[in-house]
Amino acid sequence: MITTICSSLYVIYLLIIRFFGVIKQNKNEDYLAEIPEKLKLSDVTVLIPFRNEAKRIEQLLISLNASTKLPANIVFIDDHSTDDSIKIIAQNNTTLNFNVLGMPDDLNGKKQAIRFGIAAFPSTYYLTMDADIVFASDYFQNIEDLPKVDMLILPVILKANSFFQRFFELDVLLINALNQGVAGLKSPIVASGANLLFKAATFHKVDSIKKHAHINSGDDVFLLNDFKKAGARVELISAMNHAVSTETPQSINEYLQQRLRWFSKTGAVKDRDATILVVFQAIFTGLFFVGLMYFGINANWNRFVEVIAFKLIIDTLFFWSFFQLQGRLITLILLPFYELILPFYSILIVALSSFKTVQWKGRIIKNY
Image (cartoon, rainbow, N blue to C red; front, side, top):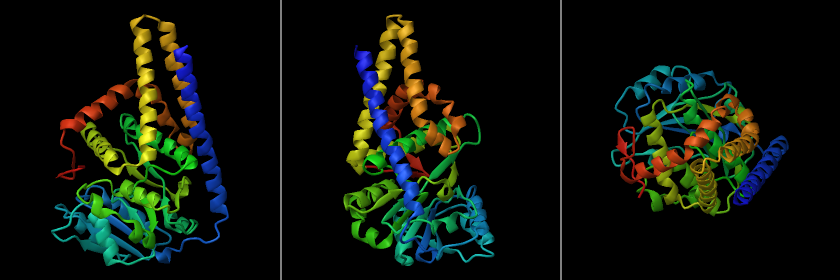
């Protein structure tokens, strides 16, 4: 009886998210086709903070040089790099006039880098990018198909270089699929600074950097939360012609450091919508795991297999279309393994967050 009730609630929960996700995607497509006023690239300045990206920045430079159309300004902001990043940018700056800013000694971190770039290059709109992304040659041209709203959350695709690294991209895809549904129901809860476009006038009105300047990560989610709290218009764009791609973490340690950064800033953001979703996910994951333990301890293997099969089928049906849209259906094959290790993985992240020092590019990340 209890198993039936929990299963029914889980199906209802996913159906609600899926229903509004489909509505959001359909509205998105119709909206983009009938936009009354579209963006102009001449009004857009691209901000690219970087720190020690010599090994990966060249692919971004190739994408920029191959672009059929470019925005008003492309600004690289150097966050005190100690490698050859600036040299590589200069070597590739033969046909385009990139702007390179060096941050002063009293500023550091991505949040400060973005605001330093905004202060140096006034613009109508800003597009933030990471230094390790790649995109199609018509990416910027397609920007002019987008609406003039306060914020546009554009797609970021993680691409694995090996079968093992597909595990690293799986949970990001799952989060983004849920984000699409939540965006249809109310508003997005996740954004990535690797591909985020926003209106300067709104930014200057809502920016709350003084409240979280001491937290040196979360530039994107804090900004999203500022826009949401102010009632600004935020649109989640799922069309792949507006996507950029980036590599997954290259090692388990890099993966754990990334997830710990994400986890540790969640509480500081205080996004009620995100908190509610996390609570629901934790409840259903916990019930699934407890159910498996109960049937396993009592050697009720028929029900044990039924619970696994039920959740796998429901989740696969729910996530299929999103993974297909992202061109990552092969990653969905890993879902059964992921769901079995998820409780242990979640416990590990919580435990590590209590004592493990979180680092990024040689710096300790503070989220308190």
